[in-house]
Length: 116
Image 1 (cartoon, rainbow, N blue to C red):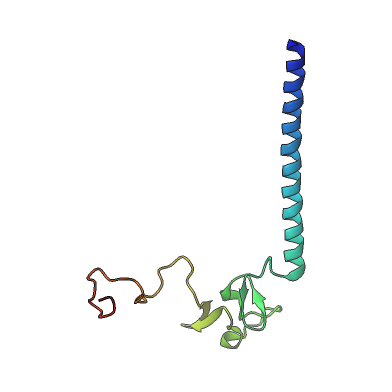
Image 2 (cartoon, rainbow, N blue to C red):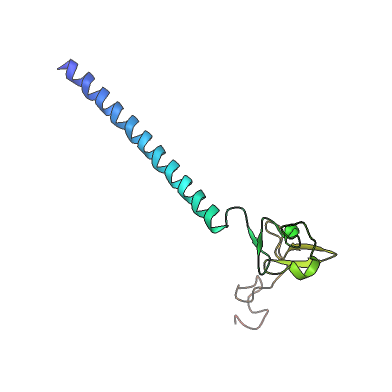
């Protein structure tokens, strides 16, 4: 009976190993397919919309494929022209502008005349 336990344990270990290998294979195939789709659609390298074209970052929006600088006329979409260069409209990760939220109850209840 003891020898059967060893065989069962080895079979269980082999099953877990194969399951892990199969899972890794599925993840790899998924990532490869997603990368191929992104390359085909052009969204893998091009992260921002410049308006009528895309670029990997806003600072590259004004540049044509031949290196010609088109300036502010090619800086649109996710980007805008400011201080002589093309910049992101939204500073991701930075602190946003203050916007009061009148739907939150203030510390002093009733101070806005809304929550009486």
